[in-house]
Image 1 (tube, one colour):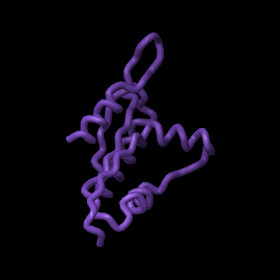
Image 2 (cartoon, rainbow, N blue to C red):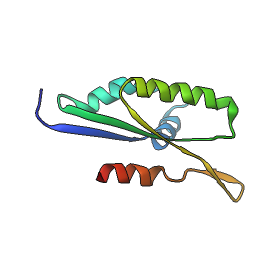
Image 3 (cartoon, rainbow, N blue to C red):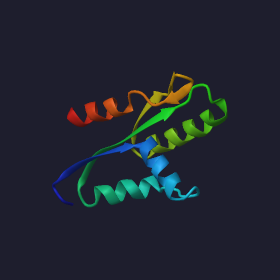
Length: 104
C-alpha cells in the first residue's frame, strides 16, 4: 500500500443532480466510487454531504436507508435540512460544512 493518505469529500446533492442531468436512470456505486478515488492510498475517511427535506415524508425513509447504507460502508454522512425562502426549498449549510471539514 502507498504511504499517501487521502480523505474523500462528496457533495451528494451536486453529484445527484449532475447524474440526473446526464441520464435519469444513472446510478452510482458508492462503494466502487470510494475505492477508485482512494486507489492504493490509505483512506482516512470518505465524507458524504447531503440535504434532506424534513417535510417530505414520502422520501424520508428512502433517504434514511441510503444514509444508513453509506455509514455502514465507512462514510461519514453529514445531513442538512432544506430551508424555505420565497416559497422555494433550497440547500443551506452543506457547502460551509464541507469546507469546514476540509480545513480541519
